[in-house]
Amino acid sequence: MAQPIVQVTEGQLAGRAASDDVSAFLGIPFAAPPLGEKRWRPPAPPAAWQGVRSAGEFAPSCPQPMSPTGFGPWSSEYVVQGVTAEDCLYLNVWAPAPGFAKLPVMVWIHGGAFLGGSGSVPIYDGAPLAAQGLVVVTINYRLGALGFLAHPDLTAETGSSGNYGLMDQIAALQWVQQNIDAFGGDPTQVTIAGQSAGALSVLALLEAPPAKGLFARAIAQSGAGLNLPIPSLAAAETAGRSFAEAKGAKTIADLRALPVDQLIAAPNPGAGGDEPLLQFVPIHDGKLLSEKASALADVPLMTGLTADEGSGFNPLYGRMTLSQFQTQVRKDYGSMGDELLGLYPAATDAEARLASLQLTRDRGVAATLLWLEHRAPEVRAPAYAYLYDHAEPGHDAERFAAFHSSELPYVFKTLDKAPRPFTDRDHALANLMSSYWVNFIRGGDPNGSGLPAWPLYQAGHGDVMELGDHPGVQQIDSRKYEFFRRYSQGGGLVSLF
Image (cartoon, one colour):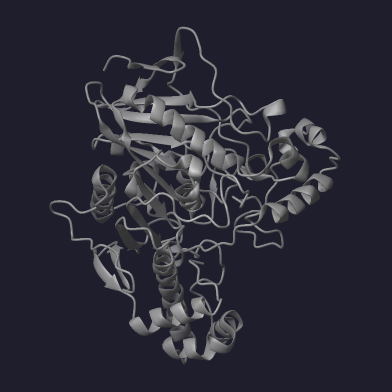
């Protein structure tokens, strides 16, 4: 294949062949570098260039703590590789070879607790999905304090603060609207998709007025049931003032002058310390997100979870004794704890381990379905819910099982990025999963010829599509679902974890 060259708003780009029938254009700037005075400001347009710009290599990822060999169940293919830099607002595009037009587009928003991640993580390689007739875009966005710090003095500058990472995502979507046709994509057929913090970003974009009209469909993986509280601007400003004081910064000018390394220290996701993991998150800033906002984007939605979301974070996951299980349930559910223990009976340590696993899985399914039930009443677009329960082979697979994000290499068909003992069953599941995702991105419905039927979500029903070794419809026990509904109505938090 000859070197592919495309014309975008800022100039010409020279990509490279990703395979015999897919071109890759990597490290494309969608905003100006957020450096100096542009730190903690909305993204500005990228500068134009003369001649042909090389787009054959990834740009730096945004600043973050690094663990390139991985941690817990997340081996190297799941984590950021290469260099990081504050000049990081770049995206990547994979597209079928020239000659195609009006192809559906997926814009992938990475996870990482709003502290880490990148569009260049190995399992996000877009070539296999592009080979199935999509244009795939992965993006970077500012992380941690650089992406989500609020502060009264920053608010005084522009009328609000925080949510810079979400602004970056919107800027990337605007760039896609302006330029994706140059890669054969259809700007009217954009699906935003993300996992974990990326899924929370998708849900935020559904409600953000500036994002309206920038996408036609949405996929939120391991996010719709997280049910994390969204801080107010005032609360985030208070936290931001404390952050600045801890850094010895008396003014915003002082903060902007600090080396980036002093701004990105963060807790280890598996450390379980006193400092909250999600310290910097999207907030109700009154501009991008409002506490009174309803779901403005009434678009088809696919959402779901993995069966063992918490296995990589909780050292007691699947290992509780009977006494620990009973104590934890009574602590978590208060006066309703004994009722819940009656729904998950256990008389021995072995039974308690199984009961605790089933409880956490059912709670995650219930959290996702209850989130769908509680969406704004004006939402009429179809929704599809899933539970992914395949244990990915590899390090301590029995313990970690279907861990948080383990579905991703199957969705992207990037099993070759991992040195894991995959079998024909894994490759068959990757074919199935990617087919569902591609179908949804094409038309808002995952179903297709030769695939097990995936039913529409129906309010009040506990049905989800099981994706794993035995694909098909699975239903949560109605008594358990009703318990979680009552607990939620009473003010209890029902969450994936």
